Length: 364
Image (tube, rainbow, N blue to C red; front, top):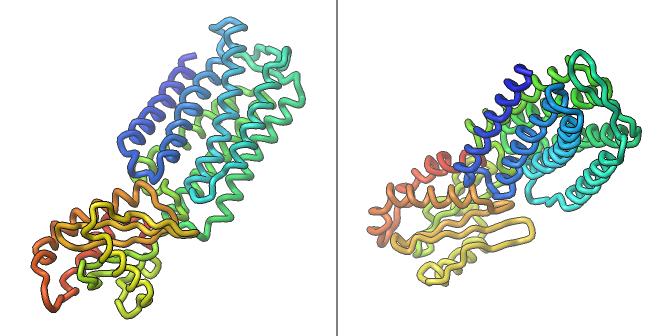
């Protein structure tokens, strides 16, 4: 009992740390849905499931109470499996909505919960001073095991399919580590529900706490690794209101782009946007295309505008754009206001250092 309570407390502490950090740093995770899913998995798996799973084996409670704990643990387990699959999908590629996956997961979860509440689905056993549960409903056990390994298959498939498109090596290492660890956790739990062995139970707890600790470590130290790993930024262009290109950076090459390399139609389009919107009250801020989002930000006071192209706009990019403009203005405000006649654009090369500072997760 003491060991179980100790493990429950550790799991709750890890979960609360993760939830707290998510809440106070929610703008750094790209999208609200990403924050909600990551916070929910801490609550469902790290607090509710872990607590009810361990309490369901304790002989200090009556049989009716521990049976309720067991039912709840099964319910929270299958819900957390669905959330793990969705979280990995959204972290890797938020653009492709997992509508079908969500409906399929909901159907399987509903069937498992329905089968769980059929009378006499489980049989009590008392082994070595703890309760264990034998599955009397073979179809329930079979479906639960199928769902466990199905989620592992989905996570491995997503990892393999999108691996080459993930932006940087550290993100790839993080995803491999977390996918492997949670796959091992699911396998160990699958073995436990078949054999109901106390050693396997504690082996599961050790691997879960290790996995949750890794996830929280990455979350706190490198939250940007959790934002849409295949989302990309392509071009970053700064224009003066006169139409002069002040600086252009290509995220795919990692180098500044010379004006002569930009297509004429792009320059004409940008100049048209600047001439029509830079001094207007209602300014165009976003152009949505089939495979691109074009983000536009203006500084009317200092007479320049920023254009950024990306697969998908998110709150991290919005925050980075605003931080970039704030610092760029601080460093170059006087130069911008004094520009007239022949403009020396080499004075604005410090833009690259600011880009590297605020857009680091998108730098190749």
